[in-house]
Structure formats: C-alpha cells, structure tokens
Length: 168
Length: 347
Image 1 (cartoon, rainbow over the protein chains, first blue to last red):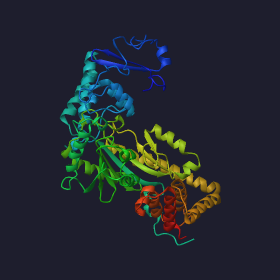
Image 2 (image 1 turned 45 degrees about the horizontal axis):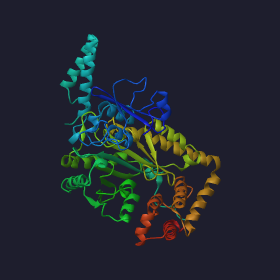
Image 3 (image 1 turned 45 degrees about the vertical axis):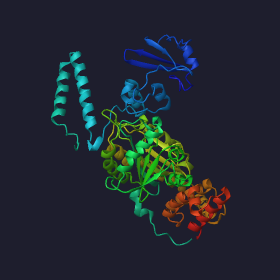
Image 4 (image 1 turned 90 degrees about the vertical axis):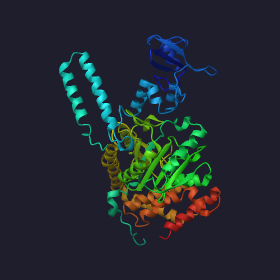
C-alpha cells in the first residue's frame, strides 16, 4: 500500500473511528515522522482525534472494520483495488464512495440501463434523493426561494417519472 | 508487381479499416448475493458456472454459444482462445473453475469467473463499436432475468473493481498507428487519451505491450454516462480524432521522404516473401509495415484481409494447432515463415 502523501510504501497504518465513521491513514516513514507519528499506537498531531486503532501487523488479529458479508477489510480493498462483494459498496460508506468517484473521474451515480431494461430509473431515484437533500439544506439555511424551486423540481420529477426516456 | 487485389480499401471507408483493425464492446456483470470472484471459494465458483450455464441455453440466450470448461481444456486450447482475443491472458492462465462460451462466428464470448463473474465481449472488424454494443446488449438482456445481476441503486451494475462500476461497459478499438510511432507523436496521443479518461493498451489488452504498432484504445469511465452516451463519444469524437491524426502522420511521412518510405516497405515485403525463419516480433513488425504500404497504395498486394488474418495466424498457438504437434522455437519460426510465404510470397 502506498503512502497517502507520496508514492513510497506506507509503513504506518492507522484507523480513526468516530461514531460510525472511520478514516484510514497510511504513511511512509518520512511522512509519518513529519506528521509526528513515532508510535503507530498514538495519533499524529494534526489528524482528527478519536478512537485510534493500531495498524495490522503480522501475527496480530486485525481490528479493522470488515464487511459482514464477505469478511474483506477496507484496507484490503484499497490495497487490491477490488471490492470483496456487492455489500462492500454500502458497508464502507464514504470510503467506498470516494474510491469509486476517484476511479470514475468524479462521477457520482449510475446513468443508463438497470435490471431488466429499467432504463435510467437509477438516475431518477438518485436525482430525487439529491433534490430532497438539497431541499432540506435550503430549508435549514432559510433559503425559501431556493426551497420552492427544488420542491417544484421534485413535483415535476414525481409527476413525469418517464420523461427521461425510460422504457419501463 | 503482381495484379491488384480485389479488396478496395476505399469501399470500406466507413469502417476506417486503414487504421482500425477491429472494435469491441464488453459488459462486466456479477451474480447478486455472491462474493466477487477473488473472494469466492471453489464451490462458489462452481455454483456461478452452474447458474450461468442454463442461461446460455438456446431457448434463453439471444444466440447459441459453445461452452468450454477451461479447467479441463488443454493449454493449447486456452492459448488459441487467447490469441483469438476470446479470453484474456489472465483467464487463460488462471487456476480453478472457470469457463468461456463462444458464439458460432467466434466474435462473441462470455468469460465466466474472470475478474468478474461474467464478462461478455462482442467484436467486429473495422470501426463498428455500435454493432458490437447491440449484439452484447441483446445477449445481456436475454440472460439477465435468468441469472440476476448485482445492481446498486446509486452505483449501477456492481463490479469487483471500481473502474468497471455503473454501466460496466467498455468500448475499445484496435488501432494500427505506425505513422504516429515513426513520427514520435504517439506520446501526445497517450497524454491526450489520459486527459480524456481513455486507456491505451497493447495488442492483447491490459498488461500487454504493443505489437505490430497496434494499440487498443478504450474508455476508462463507465459511470455517470449512459451506454449510448459513452458509445456516441467513443465512435464520433474519440476514435475519429486518433484516426485523423494517424492519417495526417502518414501523409507527413510521404511528403517528407516518399522514396525512403517505399524502400522500407518494399524491403519488408521482400523479406516476408523470402524468409525461412521468422520470430513473431519480426513478423508482426514487417507485416505492420506492409499493412501501412497497402493502405497508402504503395503495394497493391497482399489484400488487407490477408494481412489482417496473418497477425493472428502467425501466433505460436495457431501455428502449433495447424501443425498438429508441439513445435520447438525453431520449428515455430520455420512454420511462421512458411505460412507467411504461402500467403503473400507469390509476388
């Protein structure tokens, strides 16, 4: 596995867990020193503080989060650049999202065919969810004009679900 | 010079066969609720084969295929399939339960238990990725209800590798780019391809080197655009751009020193017509030169079809298959030279 900051092999691996979120840090010796990581068991200065788990070492039982369906850890997925199963996509949440988006030039959702010809349904559902999230944000920020616009778009999407060229 | 061949490159201009050897469309699919191949047990891999095989039945699939169990196939059979671009090198060399189903015309193949549970490919000569796409889409549509693919509401068709997620489709074209290599413009193509999220690979795809100045160009992005959008961009923007660049480079070479170019191509043809021993790299290189000469009308024969076929027939597996026995390296070189002479050596 490569260092997060350069292409050298990472020698320090840490998993930072905050609530249900986790973040992994992989650094080479030079960058670990620069970040103030002397002992893999202690958090480097400048990194978010939370519950720290030491990296996996030979002979040590891994405490990294693993997919309950296939048993693959996220560090293994990063190392191999391969998911273990379809459930990994949700199990590793933001980490998996970032991995996919990075390898897909920033694309954030599927557009195109779905199971048994459900053309573009996935895109419509995603768009609907995105609008709802944006609407909630607009309401929280008291941007009522923007909220009205988003609500109109949501209504339009619900009223004309097949206006996107779908065929099922 | 002997009589001109009957094939006229200009009549097949829409296929751009002067630059494009072949096109291909590939779909990556995985069976729902089963770990991806690299995390599967042997038993699970057998189960996948048992689920996919009935879906390829003639009553279900859009066209008949022949099922080949690669675990029990000979190394020569696997090598032939690889040389025909019907399976990847990885699939040919792997261990464990895996298979391939091949159509009657040997232009469609379905790899089972490669990096993904199922990878469907369709090929066609020249620039015809749309034809490949229609064929592979029909095949996928027919078998999907029988197998049930892993599909994520946000990410689309799920794949072991994030680079295949979404549509799972990859369009590719095998391009013959000798002039861009000679004029040292190939690096610019590589850089432009990178900026456009395209992969440039060798003659046998991922992990292979260029041979005979062939380069496989394919889309790297499979997410965020529909299959039709990806196809449209590939066939109407990306590939035509490279084709025009190669054609311009060919004209530059002719203008710069036509006589030197003719000399080089005629020499390569003469060697192919008389050599008694040919290594595969040398044969590929000289055939590439003759192909360029044929497309520029510097040589009138052999036909483009003959040259294109030779690129495959001179591979070690094909020679051994034709000979019906295992060949030593020297026997293989002699068989290759004899084959080339017999195909083009009458000039």
